[in-house]
Length: 365
Image 1 (spheres, helix red, strand yellow):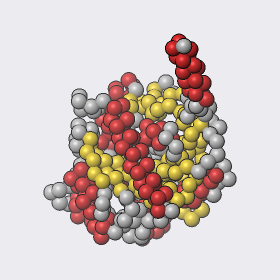
Image 2 (image 1 turned 30 degrees about the horizontal axis):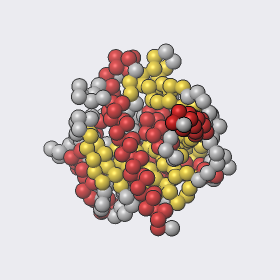
Image 3 (image 1 turned 45 degrees about the vertical axis):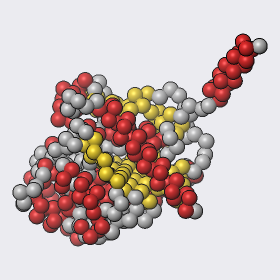
Image 4 (image 1 turned 135 degrees about the vertical axis):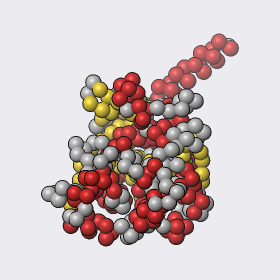
C-alpha cells in the first residue's frame, strides 16, 4: 500500500509539472515616430525605436549578445525574437530607459526578471543617444529632457497598438531607468530640469564625473558647438524648464541616476508616487552623494538601497571575453563583485518593489 501511495504521488507530481507552461521572454522591435518633433538631422520626424519584452510559451530561447557579429561585447540575457505572446490577459507595464549611449537590450537582465513574473516591459531607445543607431548626435547627449518626451510618445502609441493594448493594465504602469535613464525616469514623474543648476554644480568643488565628456562621446563639446545655433536646438533649449510628467506612471525605480543636480529641488519634493533608488557604493561615474542620495533625501517616502562594492557599470549586461578585453572600463568590476549575482539581487529588489506597489494600487480600487 505504501508503494502504491508513493507511485500515485509521483504520477500526480509528474502530471502537474508537465501541465505548467514554461514562461520565456519574447522580444519584438517597434519602429515608432514622434510626429511633433524632428529627428536631429532635421530631415525626418523623430524616430523612437522600442523593444517590447513580453511573456511567451515559445521555445527554445537563445542567448542575446550585443556587438558586431563575431565580436560581441555583452551577453545581455536569454529571449526569443518575435515569439508568439502568451495567453491574452492584462499585465502591469514597466517603461524602461537606458543610460548614456546604451540601449533597451542592454537592460534585458532587468526585463527578463519582470517578464517571467507577469509583467510587460517596453524599453525605449533614445534617438541620438543609443547604441542601436549608426550615428550618435551631441544633441542627444546634452538635451536630456527630450528623452522623457520619447517615453510619453512610446507609452501612448504602444497603449493604442492593436497588438499590445489587450495586454496592458492601464492602472498599473511603472517606470525604471539606469544612469541617464534614471534622470529620464525622474523627469517623467515630475522632475523639472534647469541646466544652469548643473552648470553651477560643475563649477563648484563638488563637481563629479558627469560634468565631463563621457567615454561614449569624448568630443561631445566640439560636436555640439557645430550645431548649437540650429533652430531645432534653440527650440529644445526653450523647452527644458517644462514639466514632462506622465500622470499614468504610478511607481518608479531609479538605478544609479546621473545629472541629478540639474533637477530643481522643489520639483523633487513635489514627486508623490512611490520611488525606489538603488546605487552601488563604488559608483564613481554618478556618485551617490550628488545623485542617488539627493533623490532619496528630497522625494518624500523614497526607498534607498546601496549595493556594496558595485560600480556604475556593474548594472550593464554581463560581458563576454571580448568585452573584457575591448571595453575594460565597462566590464571591470571590483574583485569582490559577481555581476551576475548583483543582477539577480537587484532585479529581485525591483520586482519586489513593483509587486508591493501595484498590489497596493489594486487594494485601492
